[in-house]
Image 1 (cartoon, rainbow, N blue to C red):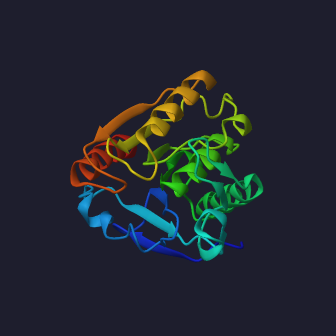
Image 2: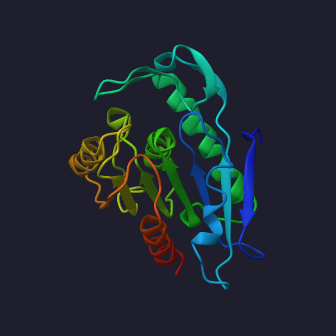
Length: 219
C-alpha cells in the first residue's frame, strides 16, 4: 500500500489502538512525536502513534513558497479559500493509513484521528467521510473547511469529537473553532469543545485533556 512517509511510535508491544496525528502547515510528522510520553498513557494500553509527513507543494498565501502542506491555501480571509482537490487527496492518504492498520489487525473503530491547524482540517474531512466507524477525532486549533463535502451517516453519527482551541490564536481565530462546532451540530454531530489561554500552539493542560480523552476511548 502506498503510504506517505511517516514517523511511528508504539507505547508497548502488540498495540490495540492507533492514533494518526497530522501536523500543521510547514511542519512535519516529527513535531508531535515528543508529546507521546507526555500523555502518560497506562502501561497496559499499548497504542501505535503514526505521524505522517505532508507532501511539499507551493502555498499561495506564502508567496508560492514550497513547504510541507496538506493542501494549498489561496486566501487567508476568515472563510479560507483552499484547494479542495488537494484536501480530498490528503484525506484519501489518511484513509490508506487506516486501511493499513486494519491489515495489521487494528480495526477502524480502534483508530483515532488527530490534527493540528491545517492537519485538523484534513482530519475533519478524513474522519467524517470514512466508510467505517472510527474511534474518535481530535481537532486542535483548526477549522472545518469542507462541511459541504461531509454528511452524517449511520456509521459516523456517534463519532466522539474533541475540539481544542487557544483563546488568543492569532493564526486560526477561535471563532473558526466555534464555527466548526456549529457546523458539526447543524450536520447532526455532537462534540466536546475546550479552550485554553494560548496562541496557535499546544499547552500542557491541553495535553492532559487529550490524555484523559484518549484513555476513555481506550477503555
